Length: 197
Image (cartoon, rainbow, N blue to C red; front, side):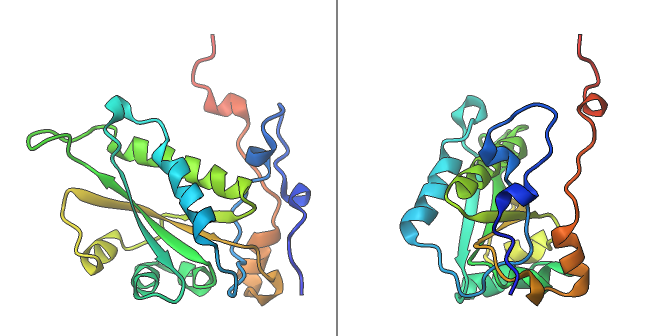
């Protein structure tokens, strides 16, 4: 059984020092299918999302928290697309990330998805601090997930966060195993800066 437990082996090769909780964060696909996240830890992770920055303190982030073995987990898993279904069922929790779009009856919040992204980022880093791992999924059928939970049109399903404990990478398919152990890369910082005067 092979576990990728030495986070230093997956730590980002940064050009400047950053917080270890950031450099050691990565997105595994091999999760322990028996691990259960205790409710206190799960609440802490969600609390971090609640305290993320929010334009005008509107707080548009909404979540569906689905624990493995529940009907909600099965509904979320059914809404995953492609090979995501092949590995995400081993996670402890699937979290649907939803943006509440309106400011009021006449206006949509232009920052709703941005603020949701900040909340998910906070959730992700708190999970890492708690010794857990996340993987963000855009390969989802948001409309199907919304329908299965009876969401109204003002609630936009944006992504799903897979949350759990590292598992046995040998249990992954060869394709997923190759992705799991591949070197981590990012574009050079200079390529991201359109202006830097």
